[in-house]
Every structure is written in structure tokens, then in C-alpha cells.
Image 1 (cartoon, rainbow, N blue to C red):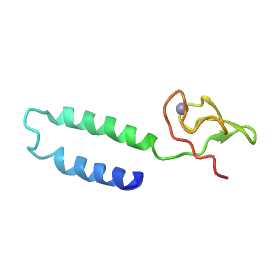
Image 2 (cartoon, rainbow, N blue to C red; image 1 turned 180 degrees about the vertical axis):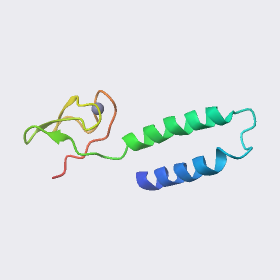
Image 3 (cartoon, protein in one colour; image 1 turned 90 degrees about the horizontal axis):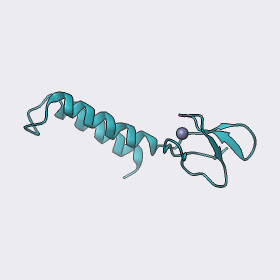
Length: 86
Ligand SMILES: [Zn+2]
């Protein structure tokens, strides 16, 4: 299952479960916090292009940490997956 499908299914689950009585003992606020955290984790696995400063160096598109093309597939600071393809 690719990451976009995972994200779509997570969103579907969130929309259907938050308002339901599934997961007794979990408040609506807990469910929203859980899905927000899960959504952020999944979003970071969707590759984003770095802000290029040169052919081999750039900045993370999320947190602006410096990242290097041949060393970093993920931002070391925030965990964002990076897409170095032109
Ligand atoms: Zn980052």
C-alpha cells in the first residue's frame, strides 16, 4: 500500500470513528489528538522537495534545516522524507 493510500484510509477512519462510539473510554478529544499525530507522521513519509541552495544542498521544506542530496533521504531534524528528483 503506497503512502497516499495509507493517508486516504487514515483520513477516512478519522472521519468515521471520531464521531462514533467505537473505542469506548477514548474521549473525542483523545481520538482527534491521536489522528492528528498519526496524520502528521504519515505526512512526513510523503516526499517533499527541499528548497535547493545548490545542486547538492538545500533546506528542509518543513523546518528549514540544511540537508544534503547524497546523504539525506529524510530531514535529520524533523523527519520529513525528501524528494531530490529534479
Ligand atoms: Zn526538517
